[in-house]
Image (tube, rainbow, N blue to C red; front, side):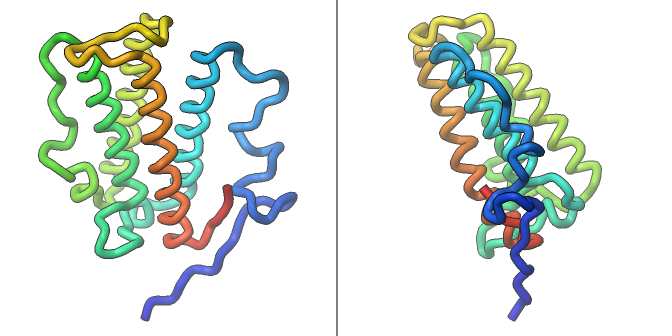
Length: 186
């Protein structure tokens, strides 16, 4: 039987939080964004930050650890998976030829997420590049009802789907991180 890590948090104000409110990059002073588009983009940004926070401070082996056998899911696999789906979402909004998969065959984003520093660095570069590329493409579509791509998906639907995907995987990241080193929090 393997020993479970001791649960802990870096927060001192609220023991069930990941970080103290003053140290949490997702917290901002002042009013929230105006309008539906701003609210959706803000929500997506916060989930992206949450994923990074859940990965912060871990070494390559910890990031690649499959913490819940028999699943192949790991924090590094989630980073690679989200880079892959950001690229795929760009395919949803184009009328042209689809971009090739980043990591090859089915489940390669998880299966090939190994504890090597070069793989970790490449995964985070891939994620940043794919996020920026899709964000840039979507910047030209301010009308949330506009339909784009071969399947005529509404921009609103794509943004909501992106939030949904990150939210689901941030929940996975909570559990994976707790299994890796015991760190818990919102």
